[in-house]
Amino acid sequence: MTTPRIIFAGTPEFAAASLLALIDSGRVPCAVLTQPDRPAGRGKNLTASPVKQVALAHDVPILQPATLKDEGSVVALEALRPDIMIVAAYGLILPRSVLDIPRMGCLNVHASLLPRWRGAAPIQAAILAGDDESGVCLMAMEAGLDTGPVFVCRAMAIGERETAGELHDRLAAAGSELLVQHLDEIIAGKLAAKPQEDDLATYAPKVKPADAMLDWHEPAIDLVRRVRAFNPVPGAWFMIGDERIKCWAAQSQAGVDAPAGTVIAAGPDGIDISCGEGVLKLETLQRPGKRPVTAAEFSSQIDLAGRQL
View 1 (cartoon, rainbow, N blue to C red):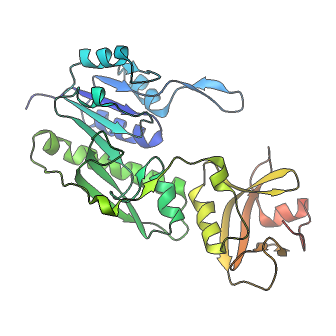
View 2 (tube, rainbow, N blue to C red):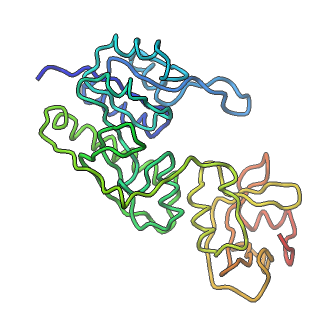
């Protein structure tokens, strides 16, 4: 079989794992599409995406258009004469004019068990919903949002205390393995794609900082999921005075008769906050500009006992 010409489109660490797996397996793309460099870190210096960093390290040509909707981007991609485009968390919508360029179509590596959690934040959505499992799929792309037929999926259980960051790393590894394992079958037409059941679809919109706020009127079990779902980005948070405090680890336990937001205990094993249902025990906290600390160390900095948050 003639070696196919591959364009790889992706941006974050999740995508970088698949790109590196392709390169390590001898399937070096003819070009990489990734989002433009963005300001990052305290210095807000322009920083290359993880996918761009992998491409640079392996001398793969890089394209970084701000949009794919202009004629120049389409012409540049057509000139590459790709057989297939592999997409993983690229972050830009692929218009029909781009989807139609590769003669074998576009293949997406998606971090959910489709049709559950179509959209930009499937890992966070699965944890927020209390799902027992997540997974990764290889999907043929269509113009709709993650609506295309699915070639293959791999499911995995979500750990009781697993964070989004931890689940992300496992799914990134599984996705890269699945891609390398089945790419030749897909290209050869030996693996059939099955249509999704649209009536079972759920959606995972892009995460906003406000989504990570801890509302003490919610059940404690839901707040624990929020802490896990937004670790490491953007970090679950609540306010003490004018300070935005981030919470990186917490557990739920049986409730007491106290208004939501009441600090009912602040000891070495955690800070207990009464919730709409149950109690949230805060275990690891971080003040603005400071390092994360245990609840015991945090309590030595701020006296919370009996306070209303």
